[in-house]
Image (tube, helix red, strand yellow):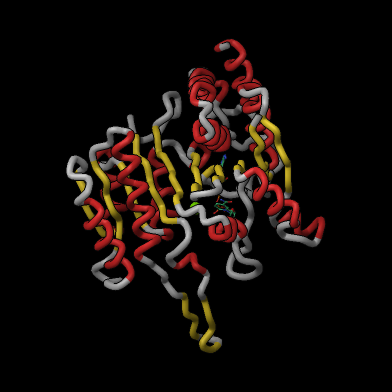
Length: 335
Ligand code: NAI
Ligand code: MG
C-alpha cells in the first residue's frame, strides 16, 4: 500500500492528472490517493490558495503527484510551485529530456538529464522596491545548496553509467554567486575522476544545445538557468507535452510535468497527457515499482506507433481521454 497526494492543478491539470491516476491505478492496485485542490481555481472557488488539507496530506504521505498550477504574471500571489519546493526542501529538480520513439522531433536519440537547483537563486523571492522606478531582486547561491545538487548530478551519472557532467553558469559576469557554484562544481568533480566535468557559460550552452545536443549528457545548473534550459530541452524531444520531472528532497518527493497549466488549451480535452504520465512513471520508479514504471513507458511507446493516437501538439487529432484509453488498453494487453 502506498499513499499519494494528488494535486489536480489549474488549466489542463485536472484533465492530465485524471489520466495519470487512472493509468497508475491500473498498474498498481494498492495506491491510496488523497485528492486535493490548490491554486488559482481553488482561490476563486473557496477563497484559499492552498487549503490546510493540502499541507496535512503532503506531510502524511510525503509523496505528491501534481498537475500544473497557474501563477499570475507580474502581479498577484507568489508561485505555489516555488513555495512547495522551498517548504519541503525539494532541492533536486531532475528533468530528463529523452526521445520517445514515435514522437517526431528535429533530433533523434536525445538522452539528456537536467539537474536544476530548486530552492535558491533569483527564485528565493527576495525582491524589493527601492522606489517606484527601481526594483531589486537578490540572487542567493550557497555552498550547501550548490553542493547537494552538484553531488546529486554526479551520483546520478555514476549510477547510470553517464560519461559527462556539464555545469552551466554565468560566472564571467556573476563572479560571486555563479562563481561559487562553479567553484563547488570543480571541487566535487575531483571525487569522480571517471566522469568528464566541464563548465559552460549559459548563453553558449543555449546555442550548443540547439546545434549539437548529442555532445551533452548530464547537465547541472542553478534554478533560473535550469528552468529555461529545461523548456529548451523539451523542444529538442517534441515539446512540453512529453517531458516529466521529479522534485526530490531528503524527506519529500513531488512529481509533475515540466509544462504549465496551458490555459490556451484547457478544458478542450486536447492536452497531451504523456508528460503527466511519465511523471507518474518517475514516481512509481522512485517508490520501487520499477516493472510498473517500465510497463507504463512501454505502453506509451506502443500507443504512439499509431499516428491516430497522437495528440494535437504531436501533429495528430487524438483527444486526451482517447489517448488515456489507448494506454490503458496497451497496459492490459502487455499484461
Ligand atoms: P505552459 O507550459 O502552460 O504552455 C506553453 C505552451 O505549451 C502552450 O502553447 C501550451 O498549450 C503548450 N502545452 C503545455 N503543456 C501541454 C500539453 N500537456 N499538451 C499540449 N500542449 C501543451 O506555459 P505558459 O503558457 O508559459 O504558462 C501558463 C501558466 O502555467 C502560468 O501561470 C505559469 O506560471 C504556469 N506554470 C506552472 C508550472 C507548474 O505548475 N510547475 C510550470 C510552468 C508554468
Ligand atoms: Mg518552467
